[in-house]
Amino acid sequence: MTTATDSTRTIVTGSKTGTPPRRAGARNREQLISWAFLAPFLVAFVLFLAWPIVHGIILSFTDQSLTGAGGAFVGFANYVEALGDPKMWQSMGNTVWFTLLSTVPLVVIALVMAALVDRGIPGQWLWRLSFFMPFLLASTVISQIWVWIFNPQVGAANNILEFFGLEPLAWLQNPDTNMLSIVIATVWWTVGFNFLLYLAAMQNIPPQQYEAASLDGAGAWRQFWSITLPQLGPATVLILILQILASLKLFDQAYQMLGGVASDTTRSIVQYIYEAGFVSYRFGYSAAISYVFFALIVILGVVQALITRRRKEQF
Amino acid sequence: MSTATVTATRTEAITTAETRKPRRAHLPGQKPFGPLRITAFVVLLLLAIGWLLPFLWAVATAFKTETDAASGDPGWIGAAGPTIDAFTAILSQGNVYTWAFNSLWTSVAITLITLTISALAAYAFSRLDFTGRKWLFVVIIASIVVPPQVLIIPLFYEMLAFNLIDTYWGLILPQVVAPAMVFILKRFFDAIPIELEDAARVDGAGRLRIFWSIVLPLSRPIMASVGIFVFIAAWNNFLWPFLVINDTTLMTLPVGLQTVISAYGVQYAQVMAQAVLAALPLIVVFLIFQKQIVKGVATSGFGGQ
Image (cartoon, rainbow over all chains, first blue to last red):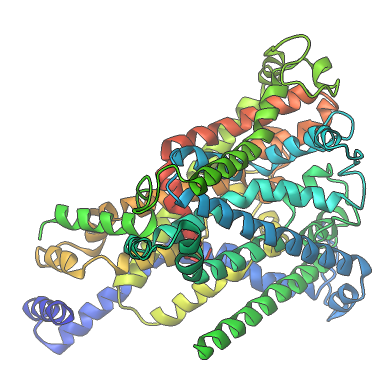
């Protein structure tokens, strides 16, 4: 295969360009064409990703305000302030707490859903639609639906509690339950994405393995434990990483379900970035918090890479 | 080898890898209606009902009168019977159409620009030879880890400097850079047999021509899958449009709806009618493109977005 490709290439170059100088000209041409292909993406990449990353770091060392005032270099003052800011730590803590609370159900429920659908029960499209449909909805829409469900006077959540003989709750208004309410809404909203990832991974398992197992007399439950689950390792690692990264970015639904009012028990780190920048107009400080948050994500990435490497060494 | 054969093989390979047909109705040696299968079916049904219920309940509320909606009576149909008053009230509010239009065209623009620039770059990384190819690709792939939320301050500042606050371009441009797309598409292009292009080159076709008439047609399935996904993300994006747009007539649907919720106060039926209306277009998109969306999730997920 490779040899064939190489010989074709040699023939092509050989027939078109004979001498070394002309081949160099062809290389230059290839360079030019390459940069022409890359240019549109690179311009956008530099303008809207690379430069903002660098500029954010620069801003984090200044006292820049939204109105354009300030901008003087303040050294590490913003970072020192951020690390000593109880509100920053509280938002960070809330974000990590939300990530812990949401990740487990978002992975486990997705696995259960996919395992059931993968068993070939008729009505695939209905299951897919039911579980994945909420993921298509805008955060505004899901927030409205859940604010309505969690409404202490007229909402369905308390009707359900009443049905089971439980005390009604103030859900979003109560600092003890507001984070839980956001977790419930989020699990409903986003579990479909993980469900589809698991389903794709399960459908990649060769059916012959199941056939062989069933010939050996293994039942459905046994097949799930001994064939499906062990082969879902890579998919689970991937889903966990994606889920943790997604949960750490909590903002939309928490902000909107509480009507934009910051609650000390639900304020996420992204919301604090937003508040510092667009409510207190402190761009420099906001940029500094952004990078503290980014550092958290990078540290997690490094830890994850180390764990994966260690696991690879073990095998 | 004809192009058609290759296309067929290629498409087949993708379909097998990413979404195979649902498994047979039941596994060999297994009773079609064994107790385990019935239990599985019941659990699945309960889960599906649980997942549909919040939305169905919102739909039911949207068809109630405001008095019934506010009564706290858990019935599906209010005492006054179903009514479309809430929907008429929402639709008579002129802005909803403007917002829907804004959402639609900006999402389409974001999707088309993202697909175009990412595919061109991915092709260069996959097939062309140029100085710095390796490290440039590493830099772009590394940037996947940067959460967009971290960049809101410098991006907003940049939009201020370019005078793009409260403009469509300010809304669109920062959303078109998707390094993950370049990665996914490059991996796909890598798998297209190079012989196809060599044949065209012998015939004297230029790179752009090869890209346009050979590579792009072969990549239609992946472009569709990932494109729909980019579209959904753009349609539902809240934070960036919320920051960059203040002009009511330039708002997208999610941001526009958010601004009127407080104005409605406790008019639950109208709030729910509005939620249902905003959800409808994407549900229709899902029903039409179900296969591509499922594939898009598989590819974008495994691409490490």
